[in-house]
Length: 152
Image (cartoon, rainbow, N blue to C red; front, side):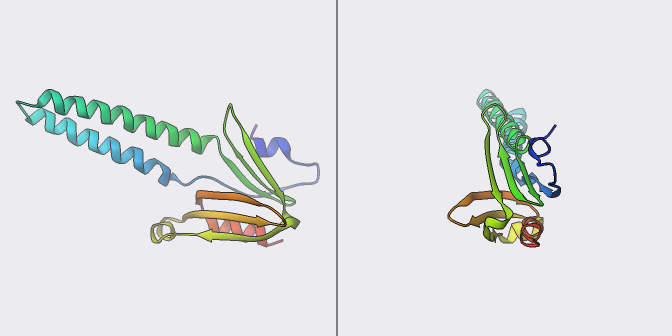
């Protein structure tokens, strides 16, 4: 059972659920691509083939670790807008949750780069009365998230 469904109040409904965008996999994928290039070079290099193969192995391990970390972050993060509050949960063993009542929200700021506009991801900052939620980076469909929060 998801954290959001577990903490719903009796008369509360989930309006919108979003996730971290798949763009978080790109750094790990880029390192894996460099590992592949180093491996291909090692096949053709005769005098330094061992060094290229070692570089390919190190980059491969690093790329796999980066991709696994991105997957774990994406899998363990929940972001939802309900009829009463905004719920943000991240972490698996060590969990961090932030909840803010909808009626305490003053503004929802969305920051998107050109790539973010093209691929529909961005950073969301929820500002509330007296406090706010830390910026949530690389969120899928940030404009739709904002619309669900400000719709009432």
